[in-house]
Picture 1: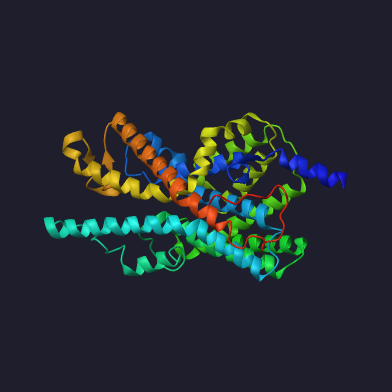
Picture 2: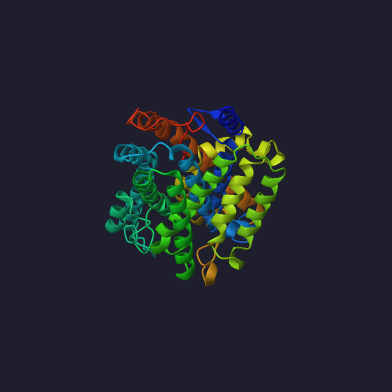
Length: 401
């Protein structure tokens, strides 16, 4: 009994109270930094600007796999022993739906407004677009987004294109809940998670799974998510381990793996990210851990879902505004070749506009967190209150995404 209490106490030392739930702040910060990297990756319309064109940002699309791994880690941490029957699974899935859907539908409506504005402008000013209003973002794409199938069925992404990941993540939650309901033994659940990781990893390798293949997006998410689940089970067995400098070493390895994405199979990234999460949890009071627990980085993690969901719209508006002002601010739009449609401008101007864009993204993320996510979170936590099985005193929070 003393051993169990000691393990719980040691596990509690790596977790801090922040907001309504218990969250691992260092991992929260990594989520925020990953969201910023994805946002910068989609600002690729700036050319000759090293902040955007450096190898790390160019390949930061793999940070979505980090989201999947971290989601698996946090969901397993919170719900592994709390889902035992169909009622538990229904409450779990309803809560996850309310976590993802409100902001998704809000950003979807913003894109509908944008397409409507483009349609009106084309009609009133006789404008001709390469991609006409409601052409690519048409009725079919709207339906897929409405029912969270935008990352599974269509061959091309539409409207708020980064939202493909929440589509596949939502259905991966269903797989997780089904396993929790079907198998009662922790050992059986763990071994099935191992089988899922091995089979899905091999399938992705054999099919040449890539970042731009939406047909394989669900499999990509399942693979990375259950890597995160297994990492969590390993951590839960040894919560008090301390490996000096483990976090620093694995963060460097993760950065290098992103930079050299073209030289390693994409299936390696979730494994590396999973080891990085484990290293951060086992890092004690290392310099990297202390930096990641700073208030600014934790704040970025708290609003990371908003950063992820708003950045594409902000960049679209900024790019079109700059194109409209190109004759006044010295912007040159590349007209031919592989860089067609991108913007050439001085370094100082690029820096200023990237800062403006990121500031707008974070501001929108905070506003949506404050006025959309928080009120809905208060409501969703009341759904099935008392229905889910008692959780450990440590696992009282939920994944912020």
